[in-house]
Length: 316
Ligand SMILES: [Zn+2]
Image: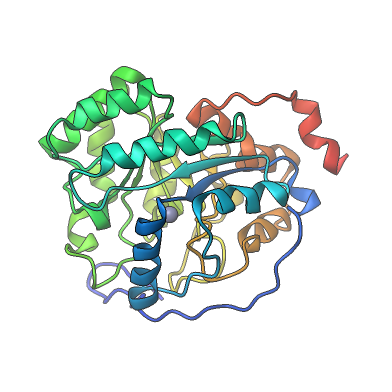
């Protein structure tokens, strides 16, 4: 299904649960894996998120609390997790960031946490500086939930803090998956041109757009060719689930620009669905290693306590 301008966007409400089989471990062919897109929240927020997904998107298969999310993935062989959350309203980011710092402390070397902030809220720069000082490695924003303009003074102040602190920004800036339940129309506020402009305005900013930029796949694939400060993650985009056609072949995309991420646990299918797909896609060993861990390591500045040859022990 095409979602180009002039055609109606697919309706993401009431998407089905898939009862696909799950594996017990990361597929051997994948090698070492950093899952660069994992959601955690304090329990009350998590429960509210599940309820929202049930009503407006898809049934979430793994209703785990934050620690169980990490334990689940690490026990199945994921080597490192990048954890993120977003503030759906002003005034809660500091509490979310404290929660993230505390929980990451229990998983030294295994979990990298990102900060959240609500663009335009009072003291947004201070909230982020504090979070970075406490060890959070970047910032996650969600344009659909937070309804901000990507090219606005409130975003500029966030971009300046990130640039100064050399911290990357992960920002759901693609138009899909959209829901009529959002307070703003993602087709009006999100566009690859706005991301391009943001990179121009902030010459030291490093950005990642999740879901391969859904649904502007081709435009984002072109932009990573020309920008050395833009990355994409795969979350939910290589699972044959969302009713959006991706005309871009991953193997033809810039190899140092794409990060594997699952969107776990907010998914309606097996935790390893995308991993299996990627591991079986016939990529070169070099491409797969970049996709599975090297690009995430470089983008988020993750220090891993193993040398490179160990990453391949499982597939040697
Ligand atoms: Zn996500």
